[in-house]
Length: 340
Image (cartoon, rainbow, N blue to C red; front, side):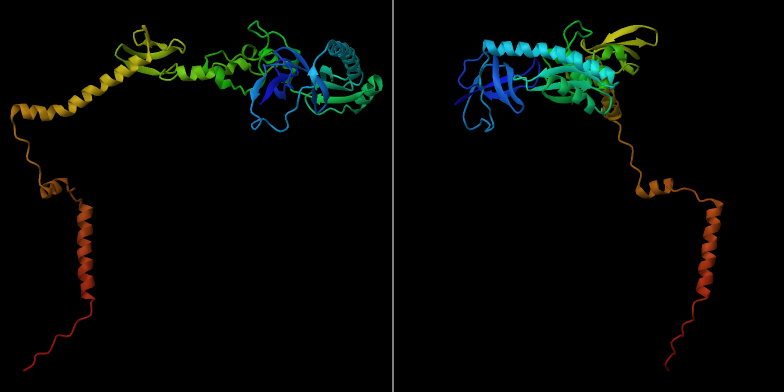
């Protein structure tokens, strides 16, 4: 049995599995781990969980140690260096008139590498900028282009709801969002109201989309003409969460109905149709009258036979003449001779 713990390098980022290495860890603890880009400081996201040796992945790495006081001081020095580097890089970008926006500068734990996160509309030739940075800070430089949603996640801020952005507080992965989600929730299709800080559609539009789709079942759409026992009119308002809708009747009355009212009306409309089919037979049985004699096939065929027009008669006469003419052209057969 081994203990696996989930860690994250920044708040609301992807979780990674590590072997706890026998350390007593709790959520929020700082640890030092070995990664592909060197040693880094990470945050414990969940408490260790015991897992059998067989299901555990073979490439599982082990936590090096819990962060000490000196490790925390080194991380603080890196943060101060990041601020200075950010200002210097910003000035160089302005000097070289590069169409890029610097978002964040990050030093790895041992300070041997600096990562520059930026956004741009297209590809940028930043080779001269990298030379300036390497000459100034004497370290390895990595330029990483990110999208606008990743930018909002790194920068953070407050949304139109007044709370911290979902992507920078708890949302680890970006799910696809479409305008259909806003339409299904009866939201105004105003870009300023349904777009977030990144300029894309709000991530929270997908939180309740499945619930709205389930509650919309059985409810008519606005503008549809419906008819039920309570009245007949056009649907002018639909309350999805309340599971009811409002119609305006022909006499300008407004009625509030539910999907059950439409179902009851459809059942009541089916009942008279069944009764109408059985009424003639019941009347004959009640009166004791014999059923009407069925028409014979010959009589029915005679009645249903269409009358031929003069043209059809003429065409029939022509056919008879052709038949006689053709018979006249047939070769004559020799009559058998009579024997004495």
